[in-house]
Image (spheres, helix red, strand yellow):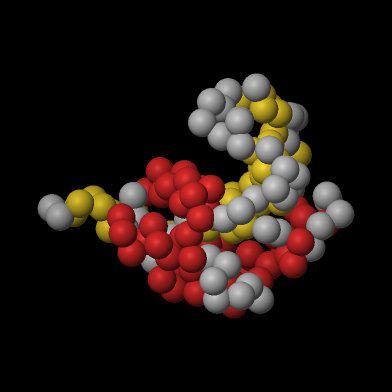
Length: 166
């Protein structure tokens, strides 16, 4: 069992307990989410004859990602340079580039996200788990190393999880 504390803009929710079997042996975690209701039309999901068409405005993401990441990390005495691994949901190359730019990350910091996007494309919600798997395969993490996972939802909601390698 893993305990996570979830917060949204203007709302504090009580701690919740969730069951996680895949990542419990590798990570402990804390999740935060924030929604910008003014940006509801900046992430869309349309069903077409050829599958899902998803869009996410990198401009809205760029406006919020640094503050959200800094706030989560500061609550644990960490800063962006302390993070040993990044698992960013690769909605597309512009999303990855925006996160890299706004956080001032090295070009190779988001390679697990770029690799998954190149090899598998955007597989919706499951993609961030695929990135975590790639990160575990390619990054030498030590117990306690901080890892940040990030995904996006309608509304525009940004979910950021602080993981600790086990």
